[in-house]
Amino acid sequence: MRKNTPLKRFNEEFFLKMLIHQLAKRRKRSAQKSVLICAKDFGGCKQMPAQEKKRAKLIDVARHAGVSPGTVSNALHNTRFVEPETRRRIEEAIVALNYTPNIRARQLRTGKTNTIALLSSVPLTIASGASRLGFMMEVALTSAMMALEKQHALILVPPGANPLDAVGFDAAILIEPAENDPQLYTLAQAGIPCVTIGRTPGTDTPVPWVELHSAATAQILLTHLADSGARKCALFVGNTRRTSTLETEAAYRRWCEGRQSPVVYSLNESDGENAGYRAAHQLLQEHPDVDGVLVLIDTFASGAVRAFQEQGIAIPDHMRVVTRYDGIRARESMPPLTAVNMHLDEVARQAITLLFAVLAGEKVSYSKGKAPDLVVRASTSR
Picture: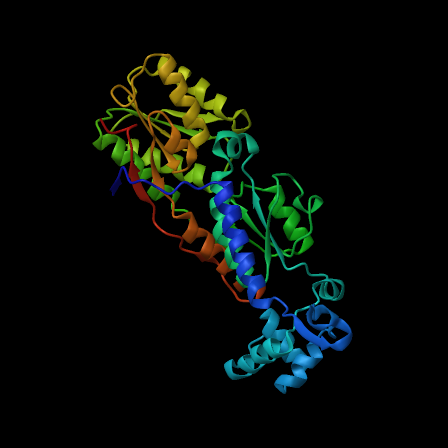
């Protein structure tokens, strides 16, 4: 357990800087050199861009490496296994000839964009605003860097029933799918490979997923509430059937057995922070003996804290508040909220690895993710 551990602030500027840094490194490695042309008419030497030289083609690389064009293509796109020694010769030929793939030609020929979409079923009322798309952006940072290493781009697609209406892409990662998620249906109908962060509920044959350990997270947070002095605890969850919601509520009801009667509020995600605000007011009226609350979604937690403070309920003296995602809302809340480190960088790494395994035709089912760690803050610590 980590207590009051300062976390590096994640924001959009840091994300963009990291992407620009990675792109700059890649461009530096593949940048075309200039050639010096010495001629009397030019009065000496001057630089002429190498683009004016004849551009090397894939067949030139194959000839230089002593292999077939198909082998070069397999090495470039990782579509089939290429012997390490053969790959080395191809890489040397690429450097020697200063070869760069013709992306437009390949897209026209194959219909592929080398683009991965990052999708979310969580509405913007939850993910945007003060949340600053934090959960999605944390996943995006690691995913984008890993995609770049495999010559793919990553795009963020706004929530919607049909993501293909927004932009074209070859594969997708969907964050926390809902039961009967329309985005999953659309992707399946279009034949687009997909993996999810969090298991798809309500099906015995979910697409490959990365585990988020929602039940374990709930157990950690509820145990901490009790250890911090809470005698009766309530649960605020969203009304969308996601695995995180279902597993958290199930874990909470198990935890209540022999301790207390369950106090569960199911909130409309479309109402955002106001849903948490109204639920907290309702809780104080209906269950004045509750002195601890697990608010699964951090946006709801922000609204709940505001309501408690308006009613003069001191946190944590008279009400202890915990949430799941250790994002901007949890860190900047007054008081800061106890949460868990979900290790989203590792979750994203496993999601990208899983997705490329799917693209390579491998039989995969799920990845185990990483167990959460408690991050204790002032909302439960006096």
